[in-house]
Length: 349
Figure (cartoon, rainbow, N blue to C red):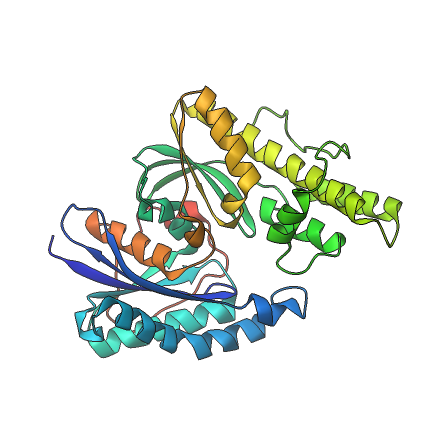
């Protein structure tokens, strides 16, 4: 296989990401440049993502970010061989911006365009790190509205072992943070507040912890946090808030760790990949590392800067598919977005 340079676009929610990756033969794909803009400051005033505002901001940011990536890499659009973009899942309007720009650019350059599954991008993002994993492995995907455990044999070969039946871990973090009066995005703020609290102060539930299956449920935990917030009243002291934050985090982390260990035991695999925004949580990393070390399991994470949505993970997923002959790019200028899209459906397609 000859050298291929992949320009990737991510616009599924509230981050606009662009990146350029090069793949040459069987060598690991190489990140040449990336640029990212987060909309956090814009959405904070509303306490969450406003889809229409998100879409409009993607329109404003995507071309300047593309120019920044090309400048960083020292390359031009003429050096791009393939344009990749997030097809789904995500916000429909936001996805349309990235897809429209990517496909239009590909047509103008007379190169193919390749749609990528957003979660496949997260799943493969650890291959951008210095400590890249090897196949096969168990993957814990904890990204925004998704919490899944998967057996990963290779690129495009994914088997879902367990997933959430209601709220995802990220939603549990964000919704609990909002109940505690913390700003958007709530998860990182809750984690910071938890550093000053007692994780055993409140006996919060661990749903499905002892079910014997690698499935998740966090809706009951959110309800329990709401109950405790009502008990402490409208103006709890800072220590009370910290204790409740620490107890909430402890409940989420314990479930994620126990379910990951269960999936490893069931599959007999000795390698775990953790990807997605919640994968940046320090307490989760600490407890997973300790538990897996006792069992002789290697744990791999993406770099902290690549835990949130970004263009590099989309370009990487596309590059790995190209490398394995799995890419099915289009040259007809057509495209569609898939706001709801199961990763298992992506498969070899």
